[in-house]
Image (cartoon, rainbow, N blue to C red; front, side):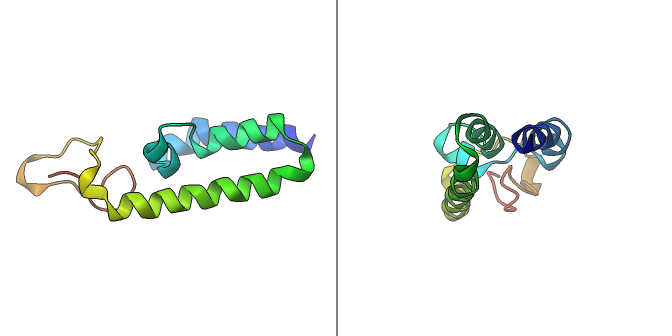
Length: 101
């Protein structure tokens, strides 16, 4: 039952909140794999209840490391937001305020 509730919460997040905040999973952006929300859903489905918290924490640590890496190398990473003229980007999809100009 707890897994089901968690899956519902993640599905709600993916459907309604993630589009608002801009779909910006750093782990996905760096490694081209699952977003964190999809990875956590898979963990919930495939792993025993006792392992879920540690596996989820590990994934979020990896995502944080990816975010730090991307922030330090953002000039090398293409921005997925179109920029207007010389004003440049107000932010990239990582929310770091950078991106191409």
